Length: 231
Image 1 (cartoon, rainbow, N blue to C red):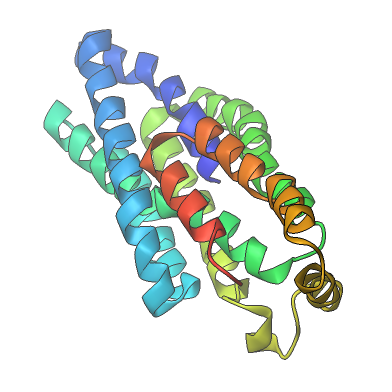
Image 2 (cartoon, one colour):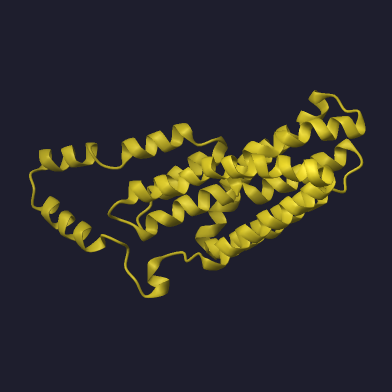
């Protein structure tokens, strides 16, 4: 959902500009406001997931982002569009950080692979959303397309929020591969200091640095901070 919305909002540029006579720069101002709010929201709101749990924050994001998209279909001035896009960025920001941080609590073994599956949803969402939005606009025009998009996206995030658990312990489970990791730590405790240092160099930090580089906005830095925490 997050990736689909992020990379597909530009499809609305042309119909919005044609309806109101806005220039591309004026229409793009709303998208700029969205990206800035997205970055700040991803950093600050996702931190609240540590205190209140990811489910509550994701429920808030589902309602806010879905509602903001639906309201975008009712705008009549540029400042109204900017306001709805600001609300959209506020609601959508944590929806990338929280899942990537939560999945690492569920997996010790194959954690990198599972993070890859989660992150790949960004590209998959863009692949699905772009033709879907274009089809909606061609059938119903941009106002109703915004409303339908808000309903579909809000529902998708709502389902994700309701099925998300902060830790496997909440479901009476253990992180996948935790037993093997505990045995490995026991072996490392008995290993020479030089061997331990080599394992640290070959461990998580390069993956975290790569995530920090490829993730957009401050949300990427927040994800890396959370990934460095112990499950």
